Image (cartoon, rainbow, N blue to C red; front, side):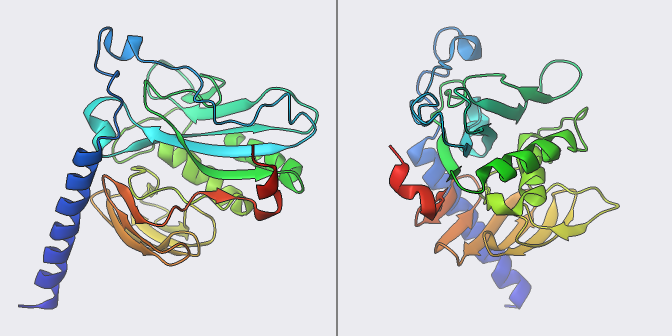
Length: 263
């Protein structure tokens, strides 16, 4: 048996494992398919964003991800970013939304930590306090420079994960590690197949997000085959897998210098 055959068998086993775990855990909300469908799915606050009034004097940045709506929630997530400067008592939220006309980059489309059509978001990154004001300026510049503001394709991209990956590349201090099931994060145009990885801390080779390899401090080693990502996270030990996203230690990043202020 040659090395290619062995590698394909290993990937097939990992794929079956990750899909099985995703189906067993079912990241989709039980209410999402209920009466009213997506229109009636809850979008209320998850109660996980720091109270902006209580922390009025603190600059805060958070990145969230939640399972996408319907059957796609077994395989992919939708991310977004929120922030507030010191002195502000409300958050600004940015994400990419595929429906509607015109610019797909939406500002304050929903509540900062609102459920994504019933799905509970989880924090990927949080930064507070010192240095965050400058980071917010860089984030706003990255939002303004997003090159696909008038284009959306759920697969293989550009989509909401492509948008957050762009911000991660432009703002390396964010230290954003999008999960393996953030389909679209590896999208790169054919004329620019080589560049920074989505965290901005490593290198990536990718053909339209369908075939590629990423090496980075945050991502570890990650192979992309038809949008299915397999890898090993060395920073916070774990397997990076399609569908379920991750198997191993929690990789949510909270700025150490501000961890004590987390409510």
